[in-house]
Image (tube, rainbow, N blue to C red; front, side, top):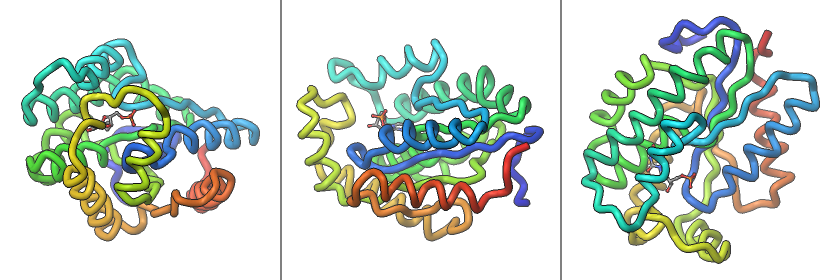
Length: 216
Ligand code: TMP
């Protein structure tokens, strides 16, 4: 297996990525349920969040009333990730659990690296520091056009958060960056057509996860 840059024992790390409105949270809940039904120990967490410090950071980065410079934003997401990894993810992986994350490192590469124009490699470096190089075993990339994602977010009827208020060009840069990341790492990042019904998206996700070596 590829070097995953960490000291995990037997667990596995599955991440779900995509634009706002792609259906990540729906898939995450369904996938966690399906894996748990098979008797696997599964822990689902979201990013930013999952532990108290990171949930506080989530409030900061979501708040439309706050002005946050791009570099600050990148560091806040990295800090939230560092705490989640140290406090929850690594211990769970060491205990042999399947950890399912609704967003992880690739969100920062796409949103801050490309969306904010900070550079994917620079963002990768600060995240290497934040996580000690922890890399997912598999990443499920829910592919949807920026317009379709926007329509779904608008359809929720909730006030848009700080990032959801960004212009269409921002999300187009993010979608293109996700595609480049998937092209560069086809073994880790599996594209799933997220315009289809949720049960078909779940079936594809399960097939991709099943192709991994089983967790102990
Ligand atoms: P969510 O709405 O999918 O929970 O994600 C929160 C927002 O934070 C979403 O607009 C994407 C953004 N985000 C980043 O820009 N960089 C990151 O590293 C992460 C984890 C999320």
